[in-house]
Length: 378
Picture 1 (tube, rainbow, N blue to C red):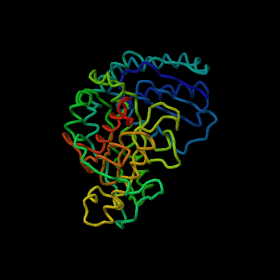
Picture 2 (cartoon, one colour):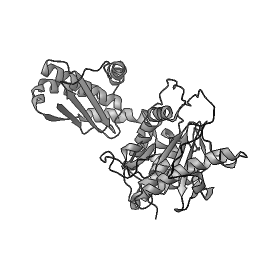
Picture 3 (spheres, rainbow, N blue to C red):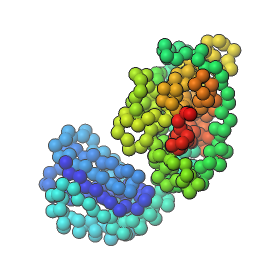
Picture 4 (tube, rainbow, N blue to C red):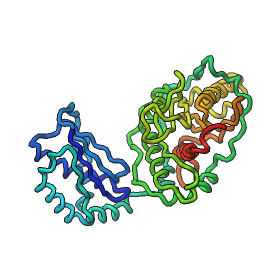
């Protein structure tokens, strides 16, 4: 395995330019080895440290991951400030390509590259608030038939004693608490995929769509918000948080939630889940069933709340949520006796400035549980 670390890139460098520089190093490596790498693993973390792993003996990919964006990357680079000096620096790397015989070698990006990237960044970035203000695409459903939700001996709808309104989970409150951060932090523009999503019919299918259209964007937003928190958040003892499936966090029972918020960078299944989430399809659960005239609808509403409440109790957490293909419903636990506060449901299609969106709501939950003195129930 050959590992090349490209360091000292400017903060928030556009990934397209970082990828172009990686292409230069790939050319050097190929000339040095006189062989085309069979597998290329590329990872860009925050576009500040670009790491390229060359696995010369790996399985050949069916498609080159850089083939399609290569033309667009070169077009952007053609108009980038400082292009000529950076290209000259790349030529000097070619001359000294024998250094690639080392197991690990570090290359510093030229100053001209940094200046050019910073100039382009201004046009290729947006406020974190705007980034979270976009709505994921809607997921068509092929079935509207109601079916019962998950049941288990360890939780039941009868265990929910009271359901109140979580009145503080609103847009105004989020801006009061995190407005400075949301307005000042800038992130690279990342368009939501344009390809129409496939229809969903089961919770597993919805989980796959969540991972494709929501999870990566939410993880990026949490990382951006917690890397450079606003000064007024300095005394909150914030821990970097990420989001993944329930299996990625610490498992305390064979029963586990669908989604977990846990400490970023931790070993898989080792960090506590600070905010368990359940994914449901809207034909099986809706927030307005809590006030429905039908007893069966009210029962199904409470059954799902009891499932989330069970996860929160076994994980000793204060917050949780239900997410369907139609809405996000944040939940706050008040005690061990089934008393909950439920926020106003956030419709999936909500988007635009001044509105509480699915992404902003999930990000706010992540920021709440990032506070070490707030996420645990006591």
